[in-house]
Length: 249
Length: 161
Ligand SMILES: [Zn+2]
Image (tube, rainbow over all chains, first blue to last red; front, side, top):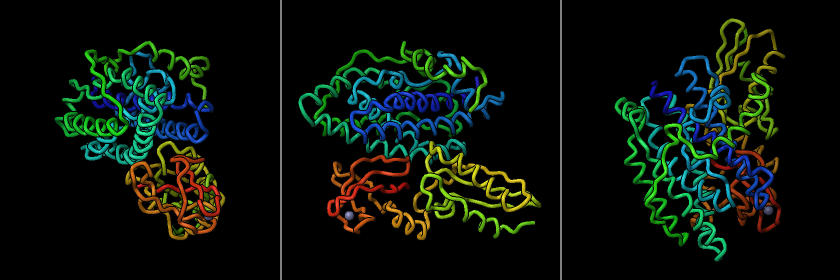
């Protein structure tokens, strides 16, 4: 197995799947500004995915383009976090998912900009600027909804309770990471987890939300083992390429 | 053979499709121009990774240079160093304001909830008493504001660094 290729798929699939979920809000946002915000976010993520897949294709060196990687793999070949494929639910659920993920992406990219791999460092530097902005947006919504009305607080607390079980996977590491860490390409998850926990704790506290006590942690995405939701996403995402193979526009 | 200086001049005629008052040079996205014989190589850097205008800009650069002479033109998109709004020229910032878009301000994107100051002067009346309506606007590079004085809603070219 090519560890760098594998790592890039994990990174790129995270961007693609959350980008796709956000795009589902297009035309359905609770207010016009947020409809526009979520599609803007989606665009940033799909842009990131494009850069990452393009590089992944070069690393793999089998002639696969960014589009081939996005549209022509089977579900088990996707390595995104299970958290990101979860249904959007209500706006609070979507923002909670976004907040938990943005809080992880920021410290990750802050470290990847020092990667010994120049291309990863460049992608991280570009993405970090966008991520900081995303995080500001999602954090503010969590505070506003949590410390809002009884209804909004209950809803985001429910969302947190539902999504929390998927957060341990953010810090998943295996032999892929071990190999890349030893050559200075990727950072250790220890520092990222520390930063994530402290930031998430601080914002949830300001939002008057309570971190649930969980005894179940759901992992598997990094190994291609997904929840039932990914298949439905891919059905929609890949429809055109499956129905009209090789089509371009 | 065309001089690199001339190519830079030609690029003054290529505009951002989404903010059509800015040239690609005002925007600061052209990193390098290289001329070898009859071939011209232009290196640009994207504003936002997902900005759909980038592909259009690439095509516009090729089209414009082909208009100017019989060149083989190639355009490369590089991510590093990452673009920042600091690269927008003073001239570009002036044109933005004239067009009704508030140019990027230092530290202006810090938000109200985090108890940080926002100072984006209204492009319509120059009043500093304005409020952010939304972090995101009609394109990836903009946020949405409103003036508390003249009540004009306006786009703000958000600071990215
Ligand atoms: Zn005004």
